[in-house]
Image 1 (cartoon, helix red, strand yellow):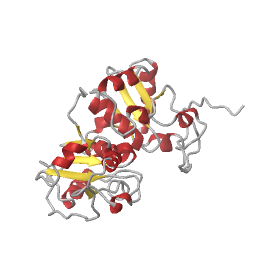
Image 2 (cartoon, helix red, strand yellow; image 1 turned 180 degrees about the horizontal axis):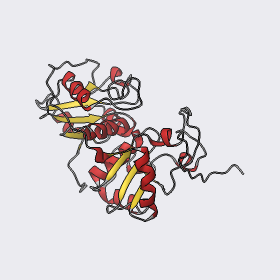
Image 3 (cartoon, rainbow, N blue to C red; image 1 turned 120 degrees about the horizontal axis):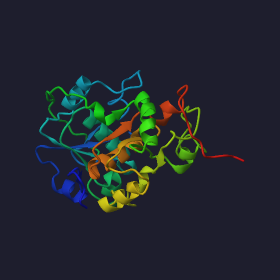
Length: 286
């Protein structure tokens, strides 16, 4: 597929390497109960809410807490970590982005995620593995991978000048302002619909095939370049709470090799509720 980085493994590779020393599987699902119904043998569960988020503040756990988390899971810094999950790897990509932002190395996604593994009828188990705890070393955050609200607002000038790009990966109805949520999802308290001025609408799912795998590098390049999102620009991706934009961030930075791509994790639930933030809305009931 000629991707920029070696960050994917296929289901055959995973099946052939089950139980190998130094290879660790982590399942990250939106539906946190899925793991308990059956998972890849040897895989541990990562709960994106309780494991990655601060219990009270709307922010992530600290870098020190990430080290402690990986230590509890028995992961060593030399281990090859393979992430996979449901929703065509939405949340696995979210964990990939967050762990990369936190300084964790040796990360890959299983192409196609849980969807493809199950469709192929491969082995699953309800047994929960245990691993000896480790002392995972200290980590250092890479802030070049994360965009904050005020940075996004400042970025609008770069977008207007043609030097930057904003990618809204939500559905067309969310982008237009017709709805403030995904189909079959609750409103989640967002007060205003629409999109950040100057953003290009490139829904995340356009990057995937029906089986949940990523499209070819050539197809992905055409998808983004067709909307003016090119490798020479400073790119910020966003969605609703950053899970879908993590998937697009992975495509742009890891698969296509764009040198400067940030994920705005505050996304629309922050921007759409913030006082004084500019919004464009193209939907009209008239």
